[in-house]
Image (cartoon, rainbow, N blue to C red; front, side, top):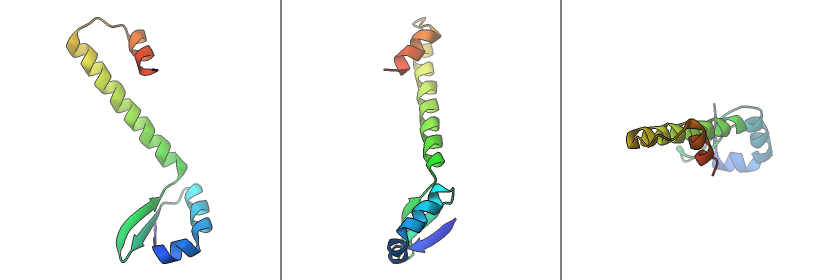
Length: 81
């Protein structure tokens, strides 16, 4: 992971974006405090997948607790809305 100050990040923005695109994680700081992070695109997709899995688990628990007899296919269709 690379750390760079805001001033330098402004001057090298295109390079930093390209490096992040290639998979490098870059932390941007101001006076030693983290103010931003540049991450590869896959990291975002993984976060979205984790959030979706958490929603599915929560939905499953809700349906089981209610004991409504909802079929798995119906739960899948509910998630698509």
